[in-house]
Amino acid sequence: LIAGSFSLSAQAIYEPAASGDMTLVGQAGYQTNYERFGIGAQLRYSFLRNIRLAPDIMFFFPKDKVTGLDINLNAHYVFYFPQDRFSVYPLAGFAMQNNFRGSQTVNDGNVNSVKIDSDSKTNLGFNLGGGISYQVMPNGYLNAEAKFMFADEDNAVIMLGYGLRF
Image (cartoon, rainbow, N blue to C red; front, side, top):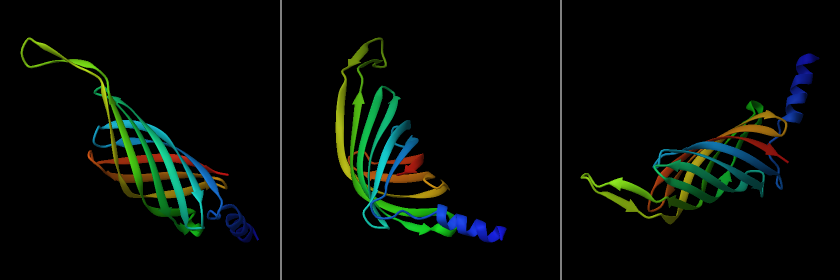
């Protein structure tokens, strides 16, 4: 009786997403090419049970006076394993990476100092990657995602997060 109730409870609580479901994921992670920490948010909308659109925005903290802001629009194809409460997904999409370099003064190797003005640069590119989610509550899950951005300045981003489905 106890084993049966746990089985029924697990089936009722841990269901895969359905079409029309929305999820908000808070993320924190690392960007490889600038070696900096970032935080962000991702909104997921399931069009079909296995296909969802996932726009996100990531802010990367300054390192060597370079601050970053990435905006991505990715699509996920989700493979669900409800008996184990996890899912995996490949992703593909479009990316916009913006980096702002603050003004700074550097030595030229001699006694002279050179002032470098602030500037910003925007790159457009494509994302490829994947992720895994593990459901820990009826509407909450842990998420890990890695993606590679193909652009003028290629880089990889590894993010860990927590999502809430509503």
